[in-house]
Structures are given as structure tokens and as C-alpha cells.
Image 1 (cartoon, rainbow, N blue to C red):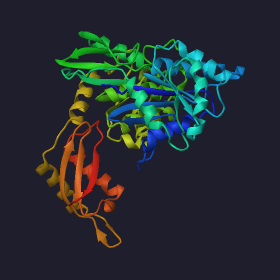
Image 2 (cartoon, rainbow, N blue to C red):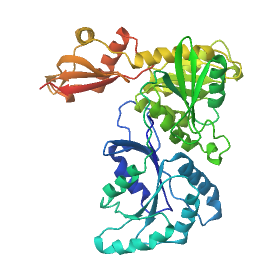
Image 3 (cartoon, rainbow, N blue to C red):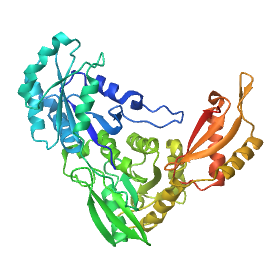
Amino acid sequence: MARPTVAIVGQPNVGKSTIFNRIAGERISIVEDTPGVTRDRIYAHGSWLGHNFNLIDTGGIEVSDEPFIKQITDQAEIAIDEADVIVFMVNGKQGMTDADERVAQLLYRANTPVVLAVNKIDNPESRADIYDFYALGFGDPYPISGSHGLGIGDLLDAIIKNFPENAENTDDDSIKFSVIGRPNVGKSSLVNAILGENRVIVSDVAGTTRDAIDTKFENDGQEYTIVDTAGIRKRGKVYEKTEKYSVMRAMRAIDESDVTLMVLNAEEGIREQDKRVAGYAHEAGKGVIIVVNKWDALKKNNHSQQEFEADIREQFQYLAYAPIIFVSATTKQHVSQLPSLIKRVNENHQRRIQSSTLNDVIMDAIAITPTPTRNGKRLRIYYVTQVAVGPPTIVLFVNDPELLHFSYKRYLENQIRKNFDFVGTPIHLIARRRK
């Protein structure tokens, strides 16, 4: 089941980013040694009382100056069309302004719950300042203080009360995959090409996002579900052209998927935005296939494919496990190979290795390259076991987790991959002190 999405909106300088940081906590940034995993600070994951959700900081909605009209439209469209709950934030010290009323006008047409948060209420005496905001028409205002962390729990309680009730379908055994990437790489054309190759359509299932349809089809006896992103069927929206929001539109689909098809445009090459989109799929622990689309439109020589693949491996070092396929949604070149590749990656994503076999591989790896030492103390690996799948997660019981250097962890992962088919899926190695 997809995570609900919460968007924080409001005029500039009301403290949205402070509240965003408090709710997101350490999940706001990627703490990984692998280079190239980048993403914008504008989105993150949040969690409260067992409820996980996506969090969007839409930036300041400026409604007074003409040059910002496009920004207003873009931000409001995102908040209205993408969010399950909108947090409308205002400045309690400043009081209600004309700008707040104009932002409210933009939100009235949303068929989305709105929670009104009055920020910068730093002490109980100033809570009387919130009553003017009832005039905005969004019910009870919630007094909060981003700088002191006051009232955040009450705000989160109000947010999760408004989450949609979507029961997860546990009987669905289809392989769920999403087609992600920045705008204009050919995602919609690729979806249509896949469905054109596999015309046994089972059903169209309404997703948790308004206007999003999850499409099922069958190929060689295996059922698949294409998890729609909000961008696929919203081609007429103004903000579809705003590249920095393509990551946010892909978040929900990635969370709901088993495998993601990361689509690149062969004509345009690799852009920084491609790394942001792919970085989220990697961090989410999903299976990843890199699909180079529009390969037919590129002027090629005998070395073009090898050179393009080398460039991908250089720029997406953290996706070294991901297979690369060159396709054309227009001519259907190699599109028919995608379902079987998706099936293979999904099987690897769910692969479980017996502890005895896994320990044999790790002990052989240590015999070839002994464990490192630090300050005269050598790392000892006593036992290894796999504790989860999707992605495969392996725990190494050691004498001191601090002694497991990143480079040696990468070496162990490479040895595991050399012995087992984990193509297309990340592997999580976790070091724990043996008790």
C-alpha cells in the first residue's frame, strides 16, 4: 500500500522548512558513503504512531508579485493534486495577512483535507493570537512552535486522522513495477509500448492517488501491475514541466513497487535530475532496471552502446547492481524483453539464502582477503544470517561494528553477488555486535 503524502504550503517565511525538518528528522538526508546518491531537500519520509508518509515542503507561495505567478500555480497544483493531506502554515506572530487569505483561496478548491497550523506560538500567553485564523475557514487552528518543537505532536495527530483508509490487497500476487524518470524521457510511451506487447489486460485498478490508474497485464503466465506515477496521466498540468517535482511525483509509485524502471533519454544523455530520481529508488531498497529509451533516434557507431553504458556506470556508481537495457518505445525495439527482466529482478529482490551457505561464502571471502584491523584491533565476523528480503538484508555478527570499514563491506557484498544471482536488487549488510 502506498504511503500517504503530506504537503506543507504557505507564504514565505512562516517556518515551513523548520517544521519540515522536525517531522522528517534524520531521514531528510542520505547518510551513505557511496558517491552520487543525491536528492533535493524538498521531500522526505515522516513517521508518527506507526503511520509512515511522504512529506513535501512546497516552498513559499508568493501571491503578491507578478513574476511569481507561475510559481504560485505550480506549487498550488502540487499541493492540491498530489497530497492526501495539506498542512496550511501561517505566521502567528505576524497575524493573518492578505497573502494568507489568497493562499486559502487556492486551497478551497482542493478536494483534500487541510490542517491549519499557526507557527511561532512560542509561549502559552500568545495562543490567543490564533483565533483570528478561524476566519480562513479550515476549522481549528493548531498552535505550534517550530523553533521550540511545541505542538508538533498535536499537529501530527491531526494529520494522520485525515489519512485515507485504503486496505492493502494481500491477495494480489502480481509483480508491481513503476516507470520513473524525469519529464520527457518517454515514460508514457514506454508504458504504452509494454502494454502493446502484452495485450492480455486483466484490469485497471484505481490507485491511492487521484487520477492514477494501476494497470495489470499478463505475460507468459505471470501477472504484472504497472504502478502509475502521477506524472503519466497528468500531461496537461502546468507543473508537469517543472523538473524538480518529478521526484515527488515518483515517490508514491516507488514506495508501492517491487521493481522500478529508471528511464533515461538516449538523445539528451544523463542529467543531474536522473540521479535524484534513481537515488530515491535506491534508497527505498527497490529492484532497479536502467532503461535507455529513444535508442533508435541516436546516431550510433560500433562503440556507442558500450560508451553509453560506461557513462551510466560512472555516473550511477551506487546502481552497479542494476541491469541496463537499450530500448525504443517508438519502434518497440527490445521492449518485449522487459517483462522477463522485471521477473528476474523481482525474484532476486525476494531471494533468500540459507545461513549455512551464506556463512561458507563469507568465510571463503575472509580466507582470500582477511578482515581489516584498526588501532591494532582486527575485525572478527562470527556468524552471518539473512533476516529479510525485498531487499535482501544480511546481518553480520561481529566483535566490533566500528571495525567494518565501508570498503570491506563492499568487498563482502561483491563476493555474495559473485556466488548468488542478486542482479537488479540492492543488498543491505548490517553489522551487529555479538552479545
